[in-house]
Length: 268
Image (cartoon, one colour):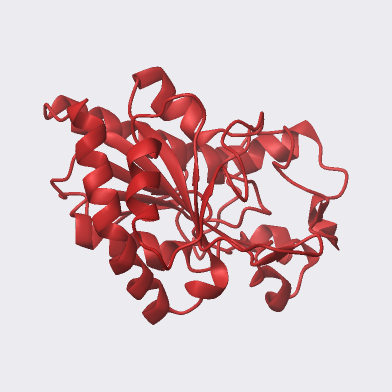
């Protein structure tokens, strides 16, 4: 596993991350031979020590507002099963969301699913830029590096972002087990939806419970679309993957569909 720290000082003149803080990203199975790059934008609920847990308790940070519960465990097992590299973010989505435009909607929310986030109140542009320099840009630069490396090796590549979603939101019980999020490139999502729907025990969402057509979507728009890579996001319901064992079980259930969909997308 490769890990990465912010390479330079923040705009406020000193690094936001200290020597005891975790890295800004991690890379798993970098030598994987699959024509696929896996990402996990919300892999961690860590907060830099300098930000004092954003004024939240560990229990609050451990909820879905802090990270994608089970997302990293699922993505790591998919990386192993599919023999694909994986890049995972290192900090909580409440520090700065790696799938939102920095400073834009949802990037550093003052309130998340009804929970106030004291450490995000009245942030300045300098504050947001410091968080982006430490926790956002290193992750996304690594995504670029991995895609460029794979292309330089002569590989035609697809990109899949692994997320998880809470089973209940805004008073609504979400019936889907998994969801495929996509915009206007159907090469990967169409075969992935078809393969997942072959499993009669799955309730599969097509741009549910979220949509990759939302204006705030960052990762797919910045990395995959300009390179014309087949791409989409895969959402898995959090109560299904809340432990390492259940996450691995669901990864094993989903991996064959993903493998066939990637092969189909790249053959077209």
